[in-house]
Amino acid sequence: WSESGEKSAQIKNDSGNKVAVVLGAQWGDEGKGKVVDLLATESDVVCRCQGGNNAGHTVVVDEEEYDFHLLPSGIINTKCTSFIGNGVVIHLPGLFEEIDKNEKRGLKGWDKRLVISDRAHIVFDFHQAVDGLQEVQRQAQEGQNIGTTKKGIGPTYACKASRTGLRICDLMADFGEFSTRVKNLVLQYQSMYPALKVDVESELKKLKDYAERIRPLIRDGVYFMYDAIHGPPKKILVEGANAALLDIDFGTYPFVTSSNCTVGGVCTGLGIPPANIGEVYGVSKAYTTRVGIGAFPTEQLNAVGELLQTRGHEVGVTTGRKRRCALWFYVLDEIKVGVAYKINGKRVPYFPANMEVLQKVEVEYETFPGWKTDTSAVRKWSDLPPKAQNYIRFVENRIGVPIKWVGVGKSRECMIQMF
Ligand code: IMO
Ligand code: MG
Image (cartoon, protein in one colour):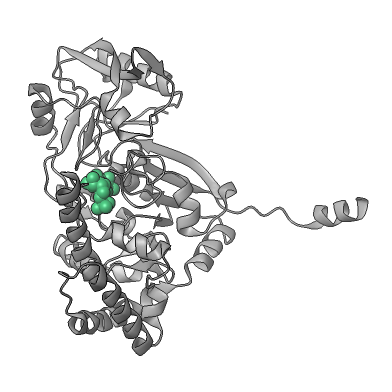
């Protein structure tokens, strides 16, 4: 004992830099991009760890609106390195389309600041086509689909899990070998979906070009993160995509996305130990929205929902769909907050797993008086109407997590810092 004890005492306890994490706490579109942009100004590295271009993060800087889907929102910050980790699925045509679009808005020098993990899986055009076919099939068989973004996310993660996927490192290696595996994968899909038409030669030709464009950005992602954590002190930030209630394990399955969008996805999606996770920020709107299908117990299918949708400009950044809206807003006489679910009159202390059960829960609300004043110019807590302060303190106490910022509008400066 003493010998091994002495030995371990000699090992320097170098746990390294911590990463801060920003995650969506609802069904996506909570404003993660804005919080990431705020923290990115003092970060050295901003990482994406899961999801793909199903995400849509808007950042407004000096009246210019940038949309990010695959690129970490940190890319606009010229002092930051942006990293796309192994847990992300990458559609290369989509990535370049996004880069071109943001270059037109003033994004410069991104290629000096972007690093991509060699272990990230590739989303092919045919994955996107299959995503569409699966939605048609769901509609035909079950009378409803999931309402995916049709970005090929589900099929790509399915390939990853069934070990038929191709990764960036495969694209960087022998292209003949890569092509054979892609063609085999297409044949597998065509045996499942005879209607699937794939022009595999033209897709491969495009990929060969993209491969050369991204080659300088590719690194061993695990080593990149190891180095970021164990090198000189650095501020590292993780930008979550999608959100807790879309998490494949904890969300409203099957109406979810195909990755772990909660904190566990940070470790597996970047290759870092749990001990290196520092502050975790959950981002949430004052009301709730959801795009796509699935249980949504507090949904307002009425004038209130309409009002939230129009006043909140609730339209999906990725698909342009109107977002479904729930809970309440400042223009209202009163604000209701869902605090518990009941089944047959009995409170349930957990979030039901089964969708039929969740569709039927009764929601218990607490009601607060609305403040009915525009707060978008407020920058200090003390200038918020007391009724708004009450509402925020209630939410804080209820969830047992201190609220760090309150957003009051979409541009960078519309933020109240609480501590
Ligand atoms: P951000 O990061 C809102 C939803 C889709 C659909 C379901 C599955 O912008 O908050 P998928 O294409 O992932 O297979 O679709 O998940 N969804 C999102 N909804 N914001 C997102 O991301 C989303 N990412 C996926 O609408 O219901
Ligand atoms: Mg979004």
